[in-house]
Image (cartoon, rainbow over all chains, first blue to last red):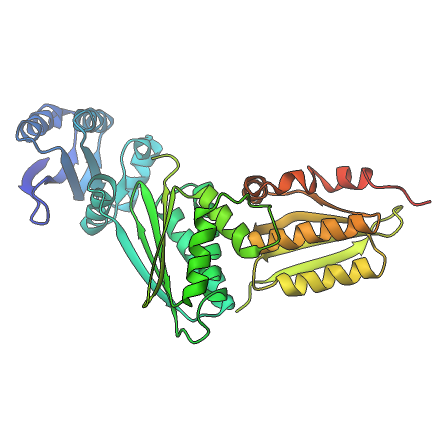
Length: 259
Length: 121
């Protein structure tokens, strides 16, 4: 076995550990010492690069699990990158996929790190024509992003509902001459934010503000707008409206259920 | 492109003025009008004992819920009913949050919904 370490050029909080050759039981002590040195240097995030690894023994895998535990106890983590297909299959048979995340390249591992530990939000901006028929594809797309980002099926469904109701509202009650509806989604590990901007006639915008401020029950009355917004209020954590001459912006925040 | 929703309508055996409607797809603002037209036509033709099978209804929004409440109200006004069965968990939750579960007749299965209907005389 050969092992070398290098501080990541992308983020100095991350240590890159290059492993090469066969990882045997006899390499456990040396590996444990290296991990301790890294922990002592206050680095708790490790990307283990294993594209040149040819074999991983069970005792060595056990040692890696122990090393990972030491990192996790300090709020850190270790992920494995670049394993060849056969080794990856072997480790999965040994149950290692329950402990480690495997990634094909360092780029994906960095993305995982930023998503999980730096609370960096990812943003998607969509411009859609002010037609009701453009909404279903957008709502399913955004719901799909939420699922891909690890949100539960229930959260994703609620997000789909929020997008649908707010976008429909912006189209149905917007100025007929508005050229487009702007939808912006910001998602991080803990929360989902949706901003919908459109051009609304001032009286309708004030009506929107009134509906949002009121405590109308969803089933009260026959007004679709009231029912949709009441539903959004109930399934989101906050809803804010800002109105000016340029248009109306509705901002919805929904916390991730299991965050 | 409008969201696809398909309504498969069939007879309900041993139930007078009865129809089974299978909803398949998403019920939303893009297709409420066509759904409203199809079900209203049935009710106008006198089929007022309706069971709606939601096994394959993936999604419903507030506009869709609005017409479901309308179907229920209209059928009841004609001494009939609009019963719903096989609602998936996500859709049921939205129905519940909006408070429509107290206004709609919801059953676990089509069989249970049919059993609750008045038999053919």
